Amino acid sequence: MLLFRSEQHVDRWCAQWGQPRGGTLTLDQGWQLAQEWYGDRLNLDWRPKTSEEAKAAFARIGLEGEFWKLAA
Amino acid sequence: MTVKAQDTSKLDARLRQYIYRHFVRKGAAPKVAEMATALSASRPRIKESLSRLAQGHAIVLQENGELWRAAPFSAVATAFPVQVGKRRWWANCIWDALGIPAMLHEDGQIDASCACCNLEMIVKIKGQKVATKEGIIHFAVPARHWYDNIVFT
Image (cartoon, rainbow over all chains, first blue to last red; front, side, top):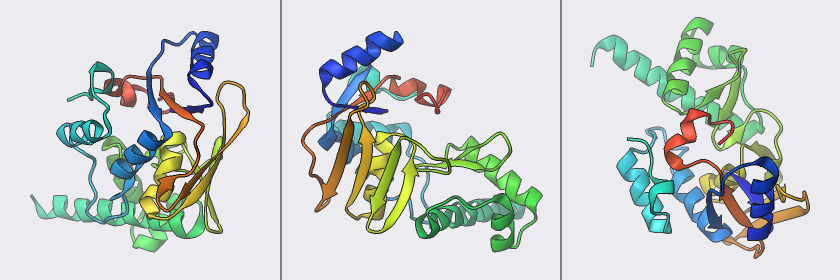
């Protein structure tokens, strides 16, 4: 996951490296995702999120659709 | 769960916690030898535990068996240095870079740059909110394929 100045710079990077356009987030969404994903990481009883938990976390941030669907 | 399974599960949880505490306190990954000493376990037992944690996507190991990543931390230098107070770490990507202050529940700063043109992009977290206006995050790999090649992802 990389950081870019703008959508145009994402397009330029994709063209340069022959990569299809993927999914994009605003910095605010990225921060929300970081809080969802890592907020409990230092807990002793931490375990990886289940697909359902991850799906719910993505939905809270507005990340829905085929691109954000996790493997079961 | 058998007694042996309970023991390995406890060791895995203790080892994971030790790794994260080490990263938080010292800004660097512990070596396998340090893990063995700290947890009073043999190196083979530590390596088995690390393998289980890696299989569960809790960590990523280097080819030599040492720790590479305990997300959001990276054991090696990356393009995503993160500062929280006077402490500094390396993150694996921009998501993980944001993940360090999120995990610590503290404000911080990421000294990143645009992946396209390399222009400096400093991202600041203040009051547990993003205080930087410019910037967009791009995920090249669909979520269902993230663990096909986590390094590229």
